[in-house]
Length: 503
Image (tube, rainbow, N blue to C red):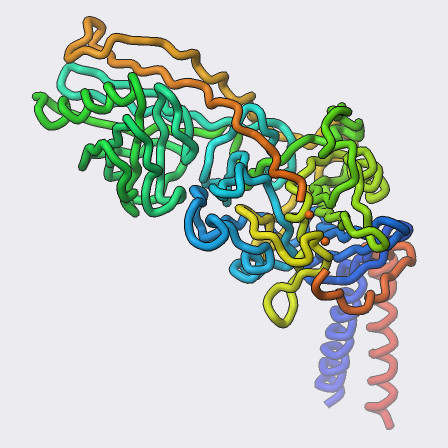
C-alpha cells in the first residue's frame, strides 16, 4: 500500500510541477502600447486600435495596426469592377458599404478617382497578388510586398506572343484595364466590368484564356474579332487595339484561321515585385523620416482640407489616418505639411497622401456591419471608386515588421517599372521578311487630375477602453528560476501528501 501511495504522490507532484512550468515558461500577454500624447484609444479587435484626437480646429481618427497583427489590408473595388462608369453614382459606392461587403475591421477611402463621371481609380490596383489595373508613371503607389510596406514603384508589363506556322507574332500591351491607348493595345479582363468601352476605330480580339487573369503565362485562343465594344468573357480576355495595334490584331485573326501549320498564342504578364497589395496615392509625404518636397503653388497642398493618409513606423506598425475639415468650429482640416507633422507625432516614418476632401471617410465595424466614425465634410458619405479595408486574416503576422535600422523597409527583387517603349512604326505585312511581327505600344498620356475640392461624422465610437501604460512584462522568467519554482512546487506537494497518508 505504501508503494501505491508513493506512486500516487509522485504522479500528483509531477503533474503540479508540469503545470507550474507551463505557467512559468508561457509568454506573458504583451501589454498594449499606450496611445500617443493627446490621443484616446479604442480596441477594435485583432490587435487593431482606433485612435482619436480632438484639438482646437483639428479632429483626426487613426487606425494603428501593429506589425504581426492577424489582419490583412486589401482594396475593395466599387461594384467589384475597376472600369466604373455604370450604375448609381457612376460606379462608385460609399466606404461603409464597401466595408460591410468584406467584413472590415476599419476602412477608409483610398485612391483618387479619375473623374466624377467614370468612377475609375487613378492609379494601379493589386489585390491579393492579382493585378487588377496597371500603373501610371505620373501617379504614386503604396504597396505591400511579402507583407512589408513600400513606396517604391511597382511595374506591370504584358506581351502577347506566339506563332502560326512559320510566322511569329509579338505585341507589347500598353496597359491592363486602362485605356484606350492611341496606337497601342489594352488588355481587358472581367475585372474591368461586363463590357469593353466603346472607342471609335478600335479593333477588339476576344480570346479564351481558361480562367481569371493572373500574372504569368496563359495560353490564348482567338474566338472572335469585332469593331465595336462587346462582352468580356468570364474565362477570357479582350485585347483592344488602335492604329498599328489594330492592324496587327486583324493580321493575327486572319493568320490564325486561314494560315497553315502549328499555332500557339501566349499571354505573358508580370509584376516587377511580388506585391500582395497596391493602391495609388499622391503625393508621397515621408520617406525614411524625411519630409518630401511639395508644390507650394498647389492649393490642394497648401490649403487646409480633409485628408486621408497611410504610413508606417520604423518597426512596421501601419497607421491609417483621416483628418476632418471644412467645418469651422469643429475641424478646419490640415495642409499637407501639417498632416505630415501629425503623422510624425504618431511615429510614422514613411507616408503617402490618399484621396481627401469630401471623400475622407473612417468607417469601423459595428452592429450594422460598418459605421462612419468621422464627419465627412459633405455632411454624408461621398461614394468612392476604391476603399482600403483592414480585414481579419487566418494567417498570423500578415504585416511584417521592418528592421528599425534599415534606411527603408526591405523589399527584395524590386526593379523599377520598365520604361514604356517609344512608338515605333513597323510595317505590318502578311509575311514580314523577319517573320517576326512586332507592334510597339505607347506610353499612357498623363491623365492624373485630383477631383475638384469639395469635402467630415455620423456615429461616434464607444467610450475609450482602459489602456495599460505599465512597462511590458518580460516574456518569460529565466530557465533557472523556472526550474527552481517547479522543484519547490513538487517538494511541497510531496511533503503534504506524505503527511496526509500517515494520518
